[in-house]
Image (cartoon, rainbow, N blue to C red):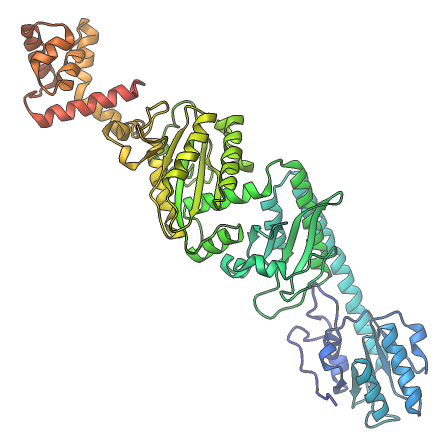
Length: 584
């Protein structure tokens, strides 16, 4: 015998609170109600089945009550009509079990004072919970209380279902993307929700009560162990709730709801409804937004890596691994392809190089490269194809408008320069004025932000059309000299003020008098202070050069024989050239 007294459930303190919000009332819930607990209920058999839902309560004194049942009823009886023969008792229990009764409750007050052995054996054989009551209980009051709770739950469920319908309808009407849909599902359910593709790669993860690392670690293996299933249900060892995302018979992936980290209520009908609506909203989002989910997912992971926006290095590794990027025993290389034909945006150097200045406005919707146009999209597609052909795991996507980021995961023995050269040539074939820059190689995924940051600084310091190094088609940090640095800083007001302070009076003098002292100063500085070379460059006599240099020293209050002061003036002229658009 499996006898025990049910412990009061913390969620069921009285008849007004079933603790079953969002799920069906169970046998355990009913036994914990004071109106039934007063009868000192004892579970004789089926103690492991007390989570069965109770759809209704049925009082019966018939020998064939099953003909009046539809399933999931809690059957109450005084035991008076129970047959005497063991065969008839088995038939009685078989009929209840066949119709799907939730449990049999028998009062041990009038006819019996202990449950008949035949009844116990029959219930054990069919797995039907058998509960005895040691004290008299008003069955009518039990039905009134339980039915009130059931009807109230049904009403609440209808209201919650309506709220789910309205929320996802609003998301669909405003053209929400997949990220917004998955986030809404997680917030409404209070559970972690994941969107995966057909290759079992986790594209979007919205954790609830857990970290990304906990949700996505070893994702592909766990996902493959969960049968696809055409209908929602928690099959497989992971006990996930799964719904396919598909359109007209074409399946695109699955949306998965993970169980709570700690012991909590199981998935209920409301969770199933919510996940089905999530799948429908994701289908609409896929039809509305042309950008593939994989591309958007890679871009999101890339931007978070470059901007160090992960909660922890462990979360970053789990997320990238779930996208198919090897995170162990790999070396990582960041490549930035600047796709703009014109100058870089003013102020780029003031932010982090990825369109993230802290305002939150740096997002590139749907992975588009706005300033790169169709050429940018084609470059991204071609580079992605190039990497797939080469068998190199990668993340690729827009870091900011007009700037494409690539993260390569290379084997320990694989040289990176041939790969970078191949990608750079592909990009330049499509967009000849693009600037391809490469950051330093790193061995830890957490250090990729540094690699991207240095690559971005190289891109910012390299003007479009700048001649390539003689041995390669990309730029790296060692290529950045003084002119490159000033180019990157040209929009900084401190640089502008410095140039004006150093040579502004000379420019004003030339403007008022029609002279050309600035050109003479430029020739003198380019000649490293050699007056003969200065005269030759300007087509002037030495005496004229001497006169002009004395005038320059007087106007600027400078000693042109001082190497330090000549350097200061030379830097000012370089900055002035860049401010005037002379970038070569």
